[in-house]
Image (cartoon, one colour):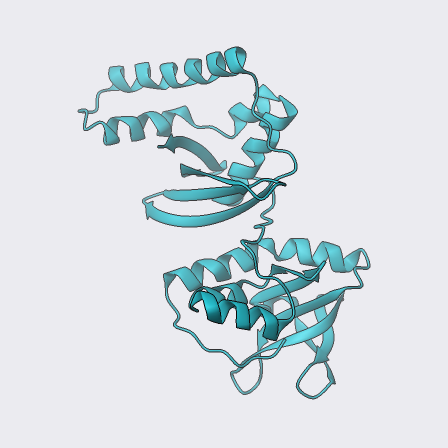
Length: 255
């Protein structure tokens, strides 16, 4: 991948770097399993320029590969990587800095850029680990538990205490322990009754793209765009809260 484009560094760009950092585990596992398609890692070289290292392998805590500008063999520490990319069936996977640049272009120039790159740049697929170490991972974990019809797993990804606080805040109700306790109980009962009445939703065979919309103390407002196999999409917006020693929990769904 050539390194010929420049762009503004802002909060959106920093969020994409956060995505790259928290999805690179997928790249590492795939490379470790012997993936033989196109692969590349982005890092800052000795001249303070961000470049790509191609045809990557992982060994002894380092990425080893080839610099495309001179075909030189090179290696970097794993921690030095800021972005990763794979090309699977002529489709870009990862490549968050490339996606950011692509979004700055007009529709016509996007087509030209895809032709220049030689691969398709679609909505993507944010492959966060399905655990509560990130807000996005907590959402994926919750949805996986729904697909498994695992009620204990679902409840482990929820925090009705914090969610009740959000309901009070968004309803402009004065806080009281009694009202808070009642809302907390109603939220849990409502979830259980809904699952009993309507069944568990299924989130198998989908892809996801996340966007950070807002944040406040200990919480993030995340939009999840779900992409189905037929290409149709649906968006959900969640507040997700961080609980000390217990990770991120999915709170209220916002219409």
